[in-house]
Length: 64
Image 1 (cartoon, rainbow, N blue to C red):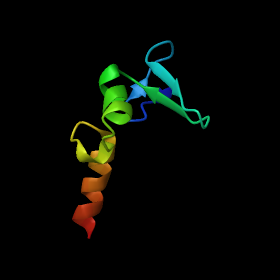
Image 2: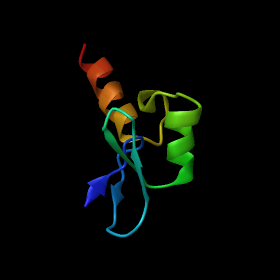
Image 3: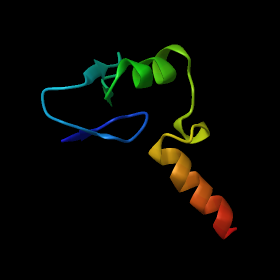
Image 4: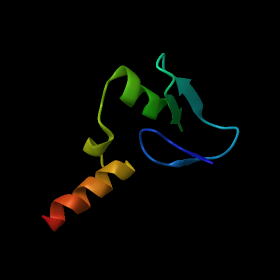
């Protein structure tokens, strides 16, 4: 099982989108929403509440 490169959601086998950059880095996406946010719009996952990265960053800020 892979994990979405933007939101961190688990992706079931046979679903989702596999994107390979020219550098050879592989990105997995659970939906076109995640794909567009990262690639087309250039957004950071840590800025959005619905991503796992947001939760990890928010916990780190509370500890400081």
